Length: 475
Figure 1 (cartoon, rainbow, N blue to C red):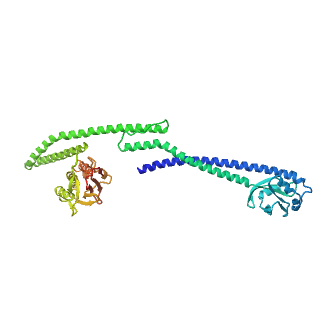
Figure 2 (tube, rainbow, N blue to C red; figure 1 turned 45 degrees about the vertical axis):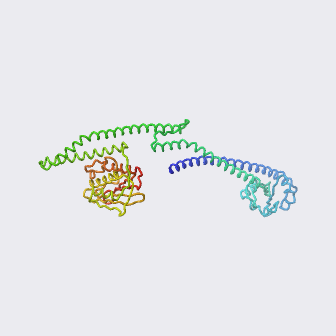
Figure 3 (cartoon, helix red, strand yellow; figure 1 turned 135 degrees about the vertical axis):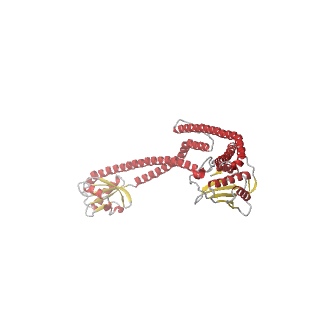
């Protein structure tokens, strides 16, 4: 259950993350585009205005100076810096060459060497150019140009208002993007929940079907692909329900047939057993061939009687007609009695102190007898060890033989009806003894398990609870 919730939560999380990521990418793309557009617009406007001012200063104001300034001192005395500043908030650098440089403010003194070299080459070529740069720790726009000769004139415009506006824009876009992502996260949760609701309903229906409720169906709504999936799931569930019903009906008929045939065989078989009992004492006086045939007849009649008795017992389990009668039982004493009667040569180990349990002694005897019969039949002459050990909440009865054993793949099938692992362990058995033992163990709430024994053989462990607790645990 925990794994199913984790898988469903993981799918919902991935869907929500995908939706949020899509929104985040979209918002980021729009924000970057908007920022680039505003940045280009603001800077383009400022460059256009600055170039217009520089054109006017170079083509009108500078030629109008009389006499034309030929040095930094003459430029300062000409009134041109004030005239340039009058038309806009601008600082001026005039480079007359040979280190003769005028700066309109002390902060720009010596700053001519920091001007972008590419801009200085453009100005030296007699063209008007511009550069965005940091000058003396301040973001500025520098427009440079010259008239026919010196000076090289650089107009320095403060770009901090543009930078501040762009910083505010970045902050606003980031806040808007964060809000958009948060809203997308909330919306994605609702969207993912809505999209996965039919999937969750299908999962719930599948769990009910797995639990045995074949009537479970998925609500169908809408006309989209999920609705089509729900409809197909319901058709599959309906087909499965019909198939299981047919199989159960056929199984019921088969079980009834076996029960009826077995019941009908009891009367003639009882006559055969009686007749075999009459024949057996006289076998010693018959010729060898006739005696051998008589012995085989008596043995086969007894095998047939055992098989019919087993089939009748199985049919009672199928009909759920068996009832338990629990009572206090000394497990060690009961095991000792069964071993002494069924396989006295087995090595027995029981605790010195009594291990008491409330269980059905008749069924416990039947389980142990079948396990011992299985060991005697499939491991003739091999050592068999039987032990009783007190465990937490119960008693563990172990029957271990040193027979040929079975493969690891065969172990899980040992308690199936009519199962024979291989010819070496087939003998003359019907394959019902372990299946019957497993049915009895399930009725008294015991756990019956089998495992291959290292070095050859099988180990059967029957764990009996101290208190009667019906269940079904057969492995």
